Structures are given as C-alpha cells and as structure tokens.
Image (tube, rainbow, N blue to C red; front, top):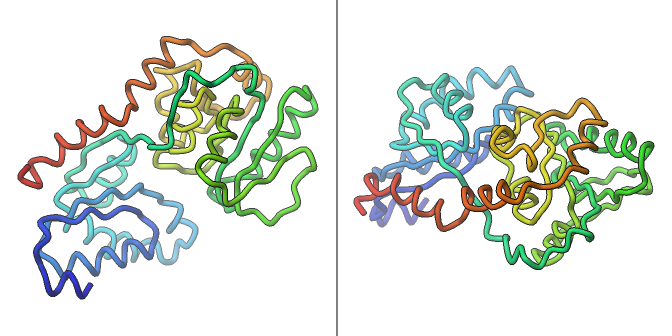
Length: 274
C-alpha cells in the first residue's frame, strides 16, 4: 500500500481471486490508485452463499463497487461472465482460457501405467470429497482394477485402499498425474479446474459435474470429459473407453500456453497501450 501511495507509477493492476479477504484487500488498493483495474475473479459464489446473512451486503456494496472500478473483468467461462453481469450490469467482461506450466513431455507416458483414480483439493464443503469417497467404494465393489489417491489437507481417516498425499513437489505431482486414468472433480462450483486440465493434458480423463466450468467442454471432447456423476456404471464405461487421439491433439492445441498467451495479449493490449 505504501509503495502505491508513494510511486503512483502503475498503469494497471491485475487482481486475482474472489475470496472475501482478496476482495477487501483489492478493493482497498483500488481506492489508492488511479491505475486501471483488470480483474480475474475466478468467481466463487459459495464463499458468500454459505453465509447468507453477509451475502447481500457483500455483493451489493463491496463486490459490486469493485466490479464498477474494474476496466476489464477476465472470466473463465460464459456462466461466470453472466453471473458477474447479474451483479453489475455494466461489467466489461471477456471470456478467456487458461493453461498450466506444469505440463511436460506427453510422449513419455505409458498407457499401461494408468490405473489411478484421483481427487485433488481441500477437504471442505465445496470440494465435496465425500462424493469421491462414496464413488471409490462403489467402484471398489465392482472391480479391484484401480488405485485411489487423494491429494489433500484432510485429517480424516479414509478407507485403507485410498492413499492420502499432501504437500507434494511439482515432480511428485507429475508422477501421480502420469498414473492417473481419471481425475474426479465433484465440487459444487469451480470457475474452471486447473487440476482437471493438468490431468487431461497428461493423458487422463475428467469426471465432474455441470458446475465445474471445464466440464462445459464435454460435448467438444466426449472421450476426455464427462460432466455427469450420478451413475457409477456410466462412469466406469467412460473410464474404460479409449481416448480419441484427434480429440486429445485438439484439446492440447486449444489449451496450449503459447496460443493462450497470444489471445490474452490481444485482449489486454488496448488497456495497457501495448
């Protein structure tokens, strides 16, 4: 804050995140500078919906005012853009794609190594780890073909057949992705799903519900993404079916870091005079 008050040289600020503390911090900084505000909310309505007595005040005043102050709002899906515009009709939104720098040499992956079904996320209400635990029990009752891995901060005692990992290095995480035949993202809401993207890029599949925005691409990539979680037999059929190589190539191209960099540069250029 002191640096902003003293220098005032910044032409723009990029703020990321929707969590209450992020918004209040970003809101404060935006008041101290005349720089343009570019905002990537990764919008997450469950933060306030679980505290409904605060939700109205929070969205009506603090969040809405921050949206008004933002010259550009970068959204990760059309649904996110529509939700933002419901809160502030004048919001200038642009839908963008994102990728991940963790992705590496896909040619080294051996398909016969892939037998792990994984969950990555905090053990909280939104991430819905309970669904993964119940799904693993159902699959285990049908077949013993798969391993189950949870990467989480959970302190719960899980069934013995579920491996629990935490605080992994990037190389350790990559080793798990390489074994991953499918990642399950059962969150009540995800503005995208970076872990889903990483798993697919490294040869796995994504199983999620319709409130996980990466699942919106299921029609474009039906051998890679399934956005229906109610039927264990359909899930097993999806996991066991082969990945379409043309689909896989198209997915990697659509979410390539270089392509996305160019798209974002084109969007930001008018706001940064570049």
